[in-house]
Image 1 (cartoon, rainbow, N blue to C red):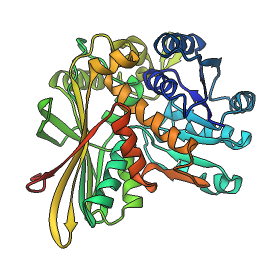
Image 2: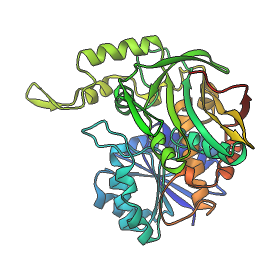
Image 3: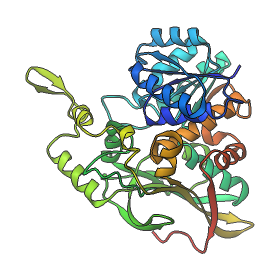
Image 4: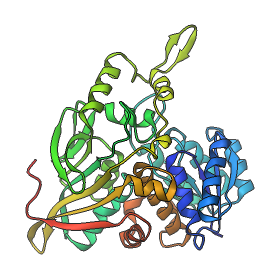
Length: 401
């Protein structure tokens, strides 16, 4: 059986479902569920028009474990692909355990009342999934996801050992808005405003958010300012590739984005604790999310490219060498294929690929796994086949920062 249930009908869910429908030889049936069924229906209409494939749609509150379990039991998928909010990861994992179905996601769990990004909550499910004979695959997006696989591919094919690893995430797209985020505004702003953290010389080093920046010339985009941030794949890569002496994550932001975000922080609009307004509790960041453009609406106006990849320095046969593996994705091409911009595309395609490898048994096991724990080769092959071709270059020297 190769039926899947996708939970989450945002831009990433839309891309994943479109790409699953384009690969009917792997995905025999696809069901899509979300809190708002109308969003699922709109995606299903687009899928039908583009591919001729019919998608089942359902309404579900993924915070309701009993209801989610009942839906999984009714749909009877071989795999649940969680593309909902990270707050809901544990609830969906609980439902998968209750229903006896494998689980997959693209982003780690975080509590709704604290901007804290770590895998401890999900790793704690290891024995439960193992005892049930079920698999939970964590982080099959781009970052985390593709960037993690890039690292293990370099480790397998180019270097005997990795000494330093830098993940560089550049979105060179322009959506024409004064201020908007290219994925869920609440999640995006929580990530960006959290303290930066990286691993170096045997310890985690924390610094204020957006306090460290470097300029880097990205192929097909040009020079951009990128800022040191914390991202969850740093934790899992440090866990599974403990040889790495330094690992960092960088993301580009334009000056206008930084200016707007600074003002919003200064006036309290990025707070995640409730405040009273006219007798009602509201969370300022959730209110801000409601007035900002919906990321899935930006596809038709976004132009430009993304460039995301890994730069790894290490040793091969005793000689220090540096390799850069990256993907370039065009916003307009992504929109033409799936109706979504490249930020959604670069996460939704890897979600489809991870699901395909689980369904085909190429990645298998009982327990909780991060994506870098499996053979990178079939994943890398499918990136080339399904819209995210990658390039590997050897650099003349390590990064000088």
